[in-house]
Image (cartoon, rainbow, N blue to C red; front, side, top):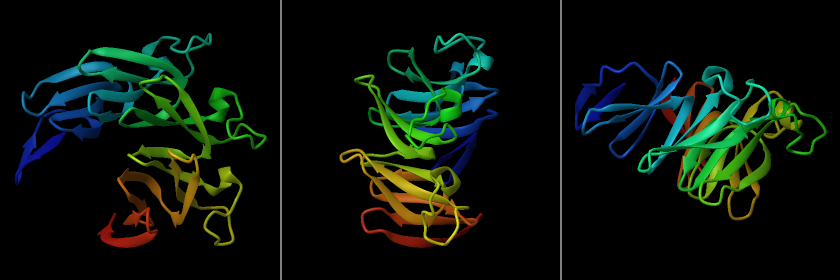
Amino acid sequence: IQTINALEVINTNLAGENPKIYGELIVFEQNNEIKIYNIKTEQTKTISKGNNPSLFANIIVFQTSEKQANEDLNNDGDKEDTIIQYYNIKEETITNTKQIGKNPTIYSNKIAFTVNEKEAEIDLNNDGDQEDDVIMIYDVLTKKITNTKATGNHPSAGPQYIAFETQEKQQGYDLNGDGDKDDTIIRTYQYNTGGIENTYTTGEKPQNDADIITFSSNNEIIIYYADSGEQILSLIHI
């Protein structure tokens, strides 16, 4: 893990993956454990077993494999699931949502994550099968679960909507009108209306902030303005 101070690169000498930053805190995973690094104090703290952390303000959300934790976290009688949990930095407490899921992301009080229907053993988007990934929302304040019924994975929660990717094969529809169902398309779920918007653009692993979405597409970085639908092809090649 490395940080940048002005034009100086600082090596923390910490092995790790999937770092996320908010203010002076960096959250990352190391050997299937979630850790926090304080840039100011240079102190590291281990939180829990887990992967794929995301950080906003005082909340760190992550996924925990029951096999790794050796615990039935959702009380369904097995240790085969992956469960969404979150850590309150100020209170130093872990909350187990008991919700099966992966790839969590957080903005404000909203945690967005993906549920695999086969693992959850339920048809979440009412399409007659249990073969899809579906975007869910957990509210940290109310503890309420919202099923968006949107087929998708790798969500990115923002102030107005959740950006995510959808495989046409799972959706069963040609989302970008190119005559096949072989693509992965970037879409959004709107908090206020519950509507699902289609960008008609191929891409993977979107990140969103305000009205801007960025994602990779055909080995290039794309910038997409959600309000106007304008797309800018970056000169950055992966």
